[in-house]
Image (cartoon, rainbow, N blue to C red; front, side, top):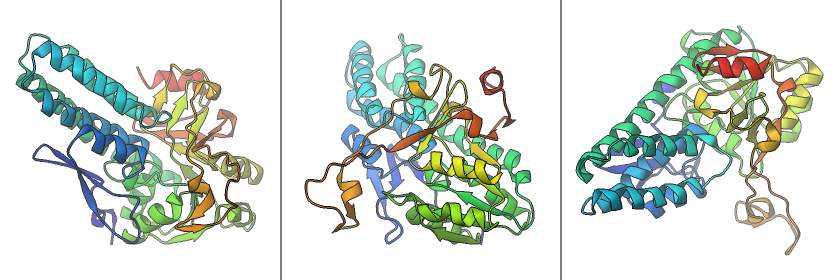
Length: 349
């Protein structure tokens, strides 16, 4: 088996967007059709589709779905209505920068078509969304090519949450080096953090790595330090939802702890990202809005209540890892090392 056995996270077929419902994994594999703006918003908000690159692609196609109901409007009304829909879709997940990046890119393409008919405008934005999708496929492969040499024979690799194929169009970011190292017949072992409270590590990462034939072992989040201390881990690779200009990195809650532990044990800690995840407008991690989610995610494990009724709950979806804990960023343009404020900007030129 290999990553070729993995399904595509998103598919655009006959003007409908199909996404894998990741809330049903690993028990059920279900694709859901997204036919209107509310379908797209709910799919992103409820994590049916998740992962920064994947929700960027979903947001781009989402605007195309929105545009379908405005084809009989005047060009001015078409643009105005789509602009309102863009703001609505962009509000679904505030931390992952790829969503706003993709929506802005599609709208920029639209604003260059002021003399077009609505049918022509639709063709233009669909072309831009398709390009974003295809670029993500290429980008993930390039991230894998730049990162695979970090994985040496016999390595143990720790990853957190899911920055895998399910978080992108294909291959993933953090997992792309693993899939391409597998392609080279390297022997290595992956340890996947469970990633509470939504268990993306156990439900998603463990599912896809096992399906692809990679040697993967699931651990609870609070086992990571012990596993590192045992000498089983030689490398950490995670993804990110937003990276500030100075290299501060917002990723799934718990990533900060993994980075601190890796620093303590002298283990390289890499962040795999497409350059679209860089937010140069945010100077540092303090400028990144952290999404706060509902209390039921913490108070229940599946359908079983695991906390007292009416207990106060703090549930940030992400934390920020300061740049000094990051060994390097694996991007489609190569591996970026410190000083990040200079070198991250340089790769955008």
